[in-house]
Amino acid sequence: METKTIENEYLERVTAYFVEKRGRGTFVSPADLALLLEWERAGVPVSAVARGIDRAVEAFGEVRSVRGCRRFIVAEVELLGTRVIPRPTSSGEELRPALEAALFTLDDLRGKHLNADEAFLRASKRLNGVLEAVTEGGFDSPAAVVEELAIIEDGLADDLIAAIPSGELDAFDEQVRDNLDEYEKRMKPAEFEATVDATVRAAVLRRFGARGVLEI
Image 1 (cartoon, rainbow, N blue to C red):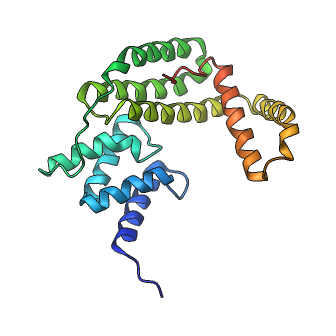
Image 2: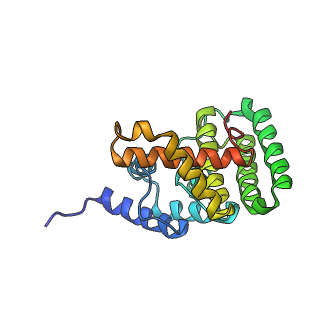
């Protein structure tokens, strides 16, 4: 029987805790796993990661990635009197005007689509958290800010999909499949379905006027 390594045990414990808090799925992304492995090797305690995840849930209501909890986890580690996770060297401050404009647009769209009020409210809350993090120097670089915005957009797409009638969503799916029909034979089934899903999500964002709002 294969013996578990310390790294595997660390990843399993943190992953299990995060998945429980996220409330769906059974795995984290490859990017999250790479980050957790880096933290394990740096000596970041599981308890600090768990408390950081808890704080992110309290702040945002839900979490979708470990990376999205990063600034809260850094804060918990530093409370222990150590800085095993490097402090950011650039906050992405130059992106502030674009972030503020995106926040204004989300609030405007919230007023225009009352049936999706909660979806836009959650996205605005997360985006406001990014603005606060930029102020506090909570990102390594502008690229890290952009990555966080992609996570927020992904969550917004999920929420908007849940907000529209199933019949309308089916119509989007049918139209996308028709448009991609000539490509289906050139792609593997899983690749084709992933393409359909991504295209439908973009169509739903466009339907609510939110496509590209979080792309800066």
